Image 1 (cartoon, rainbow, N blue to C red):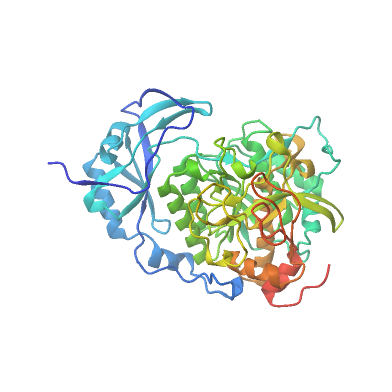
Image 2: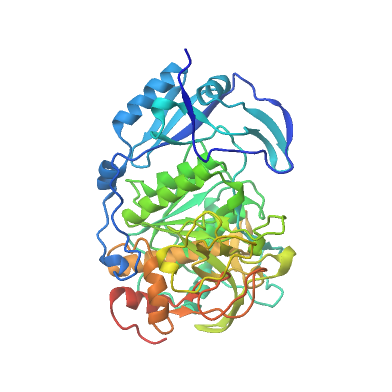
Length: 536
């Protein structure tokens, strides 16, 4: 007799736009899926002070061990998953109690029967993928225990948020306006603390493809005159550091992230987590980094994402819960807000924001065009080079509704979409992202210039690492405090008031292009420490 089955809420999938059905998946192909489970306790996570009244470094964070014991998955639930797997001819693989994930492996046929899905192959301009339509079902006795199932569908989930400037030869060349920067030059313009280098901190970087070459990194940091940081590649879910040789492909993303974060905070350990570009792989990478008891990252930088409309509800919920966990243990998560303006690259005439930047539990990083000299900013405007050149993402979330409490007093604009409800505003902060004023980096043996909000996430991650070293404690979840401090400390945030990203216009105060603005690192550090920051 068949057991009663229930649908996992928010698991619905439709084919990718433009995909063509090829036929059924090979029933004997072995695949893996990742389950997310409920937490051991229903007790809410420790307050992250969403009012902004407590300085981040004054909070008491849980250790990773405390979090796993109090808020991780229940071993009894894992035992029930083991029984379910055995019943359906599946094998239990990696179990991450802290991340509340369990990996199962088995044939396509066994997975299809276990989760009541039909797996088929699709052709798409981005490649062939295994997909499903409709919802996932599980036995009723596992309802509430299993909160999400990822990996049955292995479509590419996210895009890197980089915008290369096409250069020739081995030397760095100026871009259209004759301006490009080494990352330390950008850090000086934003007055990053110079007395610290990130020593003792670990910056985690999530990558969904591509790779780096050690010789390139050695050469790059020698050219900068900066000691090469410790860099470690971590394989997650079978993905590896695999350079493609394409300067403008995912290698550009990987190298930009490492070279920006590593040159801003060269004393920090840079841990690069390579994972598959699927919702399952992305989630595995995030939970592995956050709960890594070996390297213990205090900051996680993410430069990949996609429009909210391309994600399942179960995925956005699972990612957001992972980011809440990061805040509880004192880990800051910085995320690029996207490079396709207010549409986020969706051609339906509506405005969209990028996820995971739209999670209220991450620091969403938008983009500017920065002109300056030495430590003086002469001009900073919204990055918008039009459809072909890219523009900063930003807008109002259609999923995270209502807005978080710390955005209650910033006069959020209405969504550009007719009839849309008020939601979380994106981004929170900004930094140089325009490829016209881009970053000089080295990729696959070539010196080139790259922009995109991908550069802003590791730029802010490096700043947070400097703060953590200076304060002797992780600042963790920054958003509530930043929204309070930006208005209270003169000059702590550079307000960007000129430009637009399509549907949204820059203005005095927060806007849906550059958020609160770009950083004055020293003044914000002084505010965090409770001391008067020295004037620039």
